[in-house]
Image 1 (cartoon, helix red, strand yellow):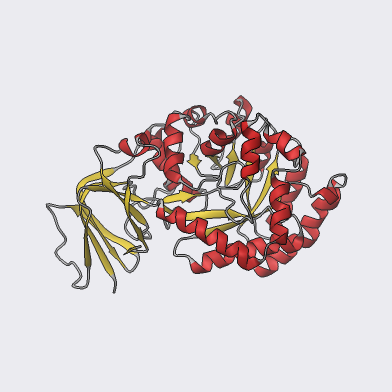
Image 2 (cartoon, helix red, strand yellow; image 1 turned 90 degrees about the vertical axis):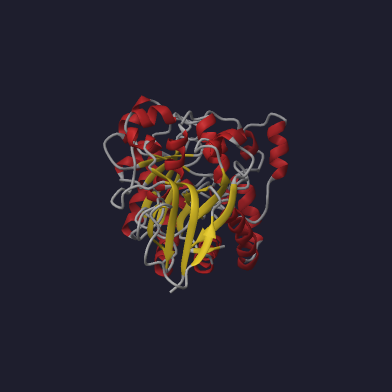
Length: 414
């Protein structure tokens, strides 16, 4: 039996009760901690924890002891919205943005999602896996311990399947939970520019059955936005995905108040993501259910669009998560530490709220909060240990400078 005994922890963070699977509204301000603590991990899971003046009496003889030296121990970040399988970077668009081109301008000039799709269609499965594996390794080193990855840069049956197979290979080869979302409804391919119905039928009649046959996806996603997929299109696509057991997780209200949130709520989406454009009707629609509002502040930061109304959502008792949106066009970063800092700086979330949004609520947005996202007995021992810090708030305060010293995955120092 493998065991890891972490001692001299300055603060053990996120000790939510086992039955707590999601936080909403004012609950997000509560982030239970234990000062001067230890935690015991056995067989890949958290088995016990306590204060240093009450050490366990039945410590396994084989336990490896790691001295945290006053550092804080957090549950790993849970990044519930990424696009890390792509063929090439898009720094040429970065320069276009500097020159004042908008997201829509770049897309109209042949950039954006279609740019990534062209490159991905030419890449082999091995090439895509190797590059995505490097990105995921970097994310893990920055504290991420669970991740959702989307397709959507394929836009053909073969290429969407290729992406989802790469995601499955990442899931098989990495030590963290990986969830897959099917996002062929990311943009209309050029050949379907004037035949939207034809592409929607291709997704429903050809792609979905093949994906379901191979068991390649957990979620059905769509980009519900002006110039992309309408509310009616999204409604049909979510219905079709549900027939194959794919639960909704959708892009909504990134560029405009599109009605995407409401159609997501109608289908009991696990999460509605982006929400940079939020009005009173959006907030009202989210009050009644458990759909999580997943906010992506590093996307707003990178492409200079408004930041989501986190305070309005939280004050309305709505569960909020934050994620990276790591992708080559609008957020070329998988750093959840930066996202937590931006959640505080730009979304006006308190440090406790931002950390909960990036851990237990991020886990809930992937239906993983029974497994990861907090410090609780029986949960997977995916943790990170920081340098010694003066307080919890120092982590988001010190943006751009990593405080992470040690990564623990499945109860082992990684």
